[in-house]
Amino acid sequence: MPRALALLLAAPALAAAVWQTVSAPPTLQFPRDDGAHPAFQTEWWYVTGQLADAGGRRYGFQLTFFRQGLEPGPPLPGESALRARQVLAANFAVADIAAGRMRFAERVRRIGGGLAAAAEGDLDVVLDDWTMRRAPDGTVTLAAGDRDAGIGLRLELLPSQRLVLEGDAGLSRKGPGPGNASVYVSLPRLATRGTLEVGGRTLAVHGEAWFDHEWGTSQLGPGVVGWDWLGLRLADGRDLMLYRLRRADGSAALESAGTLIARDGSTRRLGAGDFAFVPLTWWTSPRTKAPYPARVRVTVPSAGLDLEVRPELADAELDARRSTGTIYWEGPVAVTGSVAGEGYAELTGYAGSLARRF
Image (cartoon, rainbow, N blue to C red; front, top):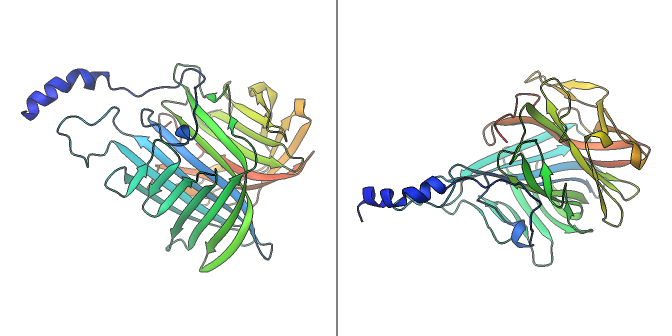
């Protein structure tokens, strides 16, 4: 069939090819939904954790894979198999808390060609030799390394509680309009062990990690420039996830939300009026001059929580412009106040607005 005729016949299918959006609580099935959702434009699998070596020296780590769709729908007749329709990027960072140093690496490739892939039936994401996979017993395995940055890891993560469906049974609203939402699921506590490479040393490590998986299209509502996210494991056995959707003037959008997770895994949704996120001090990046919240007071009055969250190292700004096109602050935090704890914070939109990116 001549290519022109093939394209003409494909025109109705092409016109109907649009990105799906999230508009209602999803019907989820696992392990299928641990895998990729290419009908949606944006997706990420995100793991952070705090680890210690045999001598008690502490580290933080982040490994995140981002899938971004470039064109919706299946390939057109006659289209090259090498045409980039989906892109996979990854950010990998290790915080040496005692040394006060963050090491960072990033990668990006088109999906296909054997170098990058995100399976649809289960968690199996590959970008070169960086991988995130789920074993049949539920163990999540991570592998990544970068010689130039002097970092690497090989970790096994075993969930110690059931999956958390964030928001309304997995529907996480990010704005007032149709489609300003994502599907968001979490595993806040994963017992973690394996090896960590830092500056030429290979260390046996153990600790706990937090896993997030999120997908959607056109998530952020109008006027939102970024978000402040916290994933906290509290010493009393509870876990707390909060995100504050931030406008340009620093105020929080009404769709800001969170989840309080009890020791038994039961959850309680938190709306924007149920918690406060108040910066107490600020840290300014010497590179971008962007000011980021440093010490933060977090209160959830209905849960008796009055917390101070502080970074374990000040400079955790990550320049990911070569992969995701963003600069953000991401690092381990310590919790004091009404209850102690640990976790991770992600602060975005301070070195440039994320409007129209998510």
